[in-house]
Amino acid sequence: MTRPIAALPDTLVSQIAAGEVIERPASVLKELLENALDAEAQSIEVRLDGGGIRRILVTDDGNGIPAGELALALQRHATSKIRSLSELESVATMGFRGEALASIASVARLTLTSRTADEDQAWQITADDQEATPAAGGTGTRAEVRQLFDHIPARRKFLKTEATEYGHCLTAIERIALANPQVSFRVFHNDNPQRNWPATHIHGRIRDVLGDEFEDQSLPVSADQGLIVLEGCTTKPTFARNRADRQYLYVNGRFVRDRTVSHAVRQAYADVLHGDRQPAYVLFLTMDPAGVDVNVHPAKHEVRFRDSGAVHHYVAQVLAEALAQRGGATVGGPVEAPPAPTLGDDSTAAAPDTAHAGNASQDAAPMPVVPAQTAGPSNPRTPSPIYPARRLIQQRFLLQEHNQDWRTLYAPLPAKTGTSADAPRRPQAQPEALDPRQQPMPADLPLGMALGQLHGIYILAQNAQGLILVDMHAAHERVVYEALKLAVNEAPLPAQDLLIPVVFTATETQVATAQEHQDILDDLGLRIRPTGPTSLAVRAVPALLARGDIEALALGVLADLERIGHSARLAEQRNELLSTMACHGAVRAHRRLTLDEMNALLRQMERTERADQCNHGRPTWFQWSMNDLDKLFMRGQ
Ligand SMILES: Nc1ncnc2c1ncn2[C@@H]1O[C@H](COP(=O)(O)OP(=O)(O)OP(=O)(O)O)[C@@H](O)[C@H]1O
Ligand SMILES: [Mg+2]
Image (cartoon, rainbow, N blue to C red; front, side, top):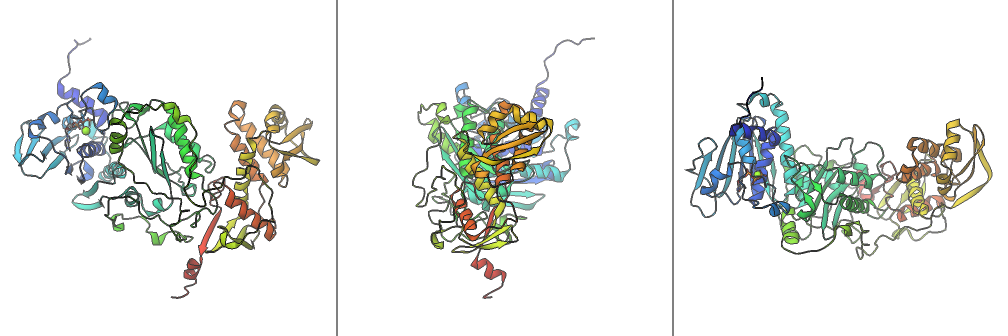
């Protein structure tokens, strides 16, 4: 029955190995693009036919391959990128295995044409005859792949329609183009021009690839801890999506999926995004290659961090800071005008907006857009050019000795100093009740002075630029929530005894939950005691919430406790409890507020971090400038 052991023929070995790396045209394309980048190309042209199934042609203007090495380039385990294990451990190039071209050649027809700057002509080789012959061509490399999987019907069967495969190819190009704005990309499909992205800075590339709206809704992220640099942008919670399809994470220039980082991002958004909404972001994490293993996935889609706890801590901190925007801190409000182009950017090539078809142009942006009046110091965007990861790695980690300890990443972020004249004042440590007495001159007030209330839901206010509209409940909820978070650090939360306890009927489970979690509830300033087998009495509530609906507050928190159940998880979920409390403690819609109360709320919003969106990620206020209003009424036209 059993057959004798025999070594597999070389081609079969290659085909089996290729199975892990080459899944579809897009995976071929990714490998070819990475090779072009490793060769320091400045300009890359991609031509696809039939979704890349019939033909993929990648032409670069990089360093080229010397004629004498062309045959080696096609061999398995032959690479110019690493020489030893120690070099593997500090690899800064995209490739290092020396098997991509060999894998491609085993499942398709591959022709390489290349010329280095020293050669006076190009040389060409096909995987079949292994002999380089003279050819026409400039400096750089042309890799042409035809008939993918033609002689492997089993694999060919798994390919989808040309349109689908083309879509995957575009995705692969987009991922690579975002991380390499200094390189220009041109894409053709069946000879029709599809994309043309000139060399630019990162913000230009984000506009070109992801559209104006993405860039307009972005919050800059820029942090450098020595061992780790985190740059790029995340987007406002109000821009969150139902799908996680706009999450671009790069580790040392490589697009990866990583649970540590995505969890850290989610944690940073936990306060402002509930439910399944997904934040959109483009983040570049660049670090000492010694701190990350890139050799864990056949197609290099995953990495392993040496100290993932430290990375998690750092990313969560930096993002939380980026999100901690305060109400009225920017002239533009929740929906702002686009930033000025990146400073210190050596590229003057302006990205033509026409390059991106199908994206909402700036003019078509939603109505409540306020152009930033001045790019003054309060503009939160302090642009920093994103240096492609490789350059940074070489400058920072491979050429210089450093002996920083990974544990330093657990340290809290240093306080930002001198960012602006009106740098965020820390929010008050002590929450305060609505205080009608503070009324400085309207000119210094970002959110202006209240004019009145609309249908008991919105506050209308006027500031120097024009009209402000505030969702009263959502804004107060956020203010109360942030105040509760600050106050709870001095557990127990300052409570106010109720003159007359609020007694209500409850289920046996609710009574049991109240008893079981009595200590936690007391810490939260909620004193709830059973008064019978099916009744509970609230005897004290946090002072901040004394004016809300106390029965609803108690029931909401008990429902949270029942759901969370296990008390070990309570500490983690504390903010969720506080959020429920804030929701019930905040002013209800339809409550009449005096002008003084409205103004006090506006002032609290200005002092509160993250006041631009409510706890559910919806915006809390909008601004229309006089200009916007004039346009609305077609004045002066
Ligand atoms: N576009 C290119 N320009 C210059 N040299 C190239 C190009 N493509 C491939 N090469 C050379 O051919 C070699 C083999 O390429 P291949 O993609 O097979 O392996 P690799 O990039 O070294 O590693 P990996 O398998 O991880 O991609 C490279 O090391 C490089 O020297
Ligand atoms: Mg390669």
